[in-house]
Amino acid sequence: MLKKNILIIADVYPPEVSSASHLMNELAEGLKKRGHKVFVATAYPRHYLPLRQAGLAEGQKKDFSLIAEENGVKVLRVKILPHHKVNFLIRGLAQLTLPWLFFRQIKKNIAEKIDSVFVYSPPLPMGLVGIRAKKYFGAKFILNLQDIFPQNAIDLGILKNRLAISFFEKIEKRIYSQADLITFHSEGGRHFLIEKKQIPAEKIITLPNWVDLAPYDSAGCKASFRQQWDLMDKFVFLFAGIIGPAQGLDFLVEVAKEVSDLENVVFVLVGDGMERERIEKAVKESGLKNIVFKSFVSKEEYPCLVKEMDAGLVCLSAKNKTPFVPGKFLGYLAGCKPVLAFLNKESDGFDLMAAADCGPAVLSGKKQEAAAVVRKLAGNPEEAAVLGLNGRHYLENHFAVGVIFDKIEKII
Image (cartoon, rainbow, N blue to C red; front, side):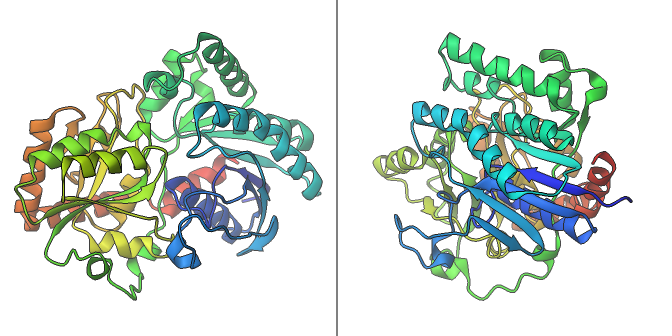
């Protein structure tokens, strides 16, 4: 394989903690190990930081290098306007200025010729950075779509203004037309883009997300989250990730009410996002004791967290109309945990769950059905363990780093 100079563009990267951050970090370091020269352009860390590991209290800030070499990867961190946990007007402004700020730093700090530009989206304007980098370096532009904006924002009722919708759809169309190749992580998403966005079939491929299994197999857990959080005698459903409108966690609150008689069942929400404060308030007002909120843990601690819990929880709002599959699925499977999923009817998560035989998937909004499967999983830990093993075996064959990176090397 001819070695390439590769630029990865993403709005999150460690030390920030999210499924996107983990994916891009694993991609960058994985390609570096395969002999490629890798650069990463990302936003300066401001959100989703593992406060405990950094020794920070809530609200404290830490300085990070704007240019650094991390495990052989040159990382550029670009200071942009806040675009997480802010109102949508500020977020929109941040995203519109993002392409200019990003490309200015890329042009200033990367002297080498870039062969391929790999762009993670959303946010959608990252694709505009990809267009400029493609033209400047004469590079191949690969757009890695994880969700479809502005469609997802329209479905969730976040984006309503007709002019704004038209504006972002024009940007979307331009990015799709300029990308040399578009990837989506599920077959349903690929068909959606072909049918709804008129993208030529030969221009878009299905590229599943991946997970590095090594940290889950060698995780040396120094401290017990169960002990720290007083969960020793509980059956714990873990939700780890962003708490935003797309997750529809109001439904989880309703399900938690239905099973509040189960004294051994707890839902632990580890993460943050623009909806956390509101959901946390709803839990307190309902007097629920079976939903617990915790801050993000570091990437290094995450495998230990997953392995200590009993089941992974995925939740998507019924308002979603795209085939999106949350990245947290794969971490749960890597940790041999069964998965309980509350999904919108369009999600490809139903197909994934059935193929992996890793747990029950229920339509979001079907409260009684959701409560019933919570009771069944919590009441049958041996069966839950078997489902967890099923998921791990499926993951090894379909989503392990080696399997997916072979495909990525072919397209770059």
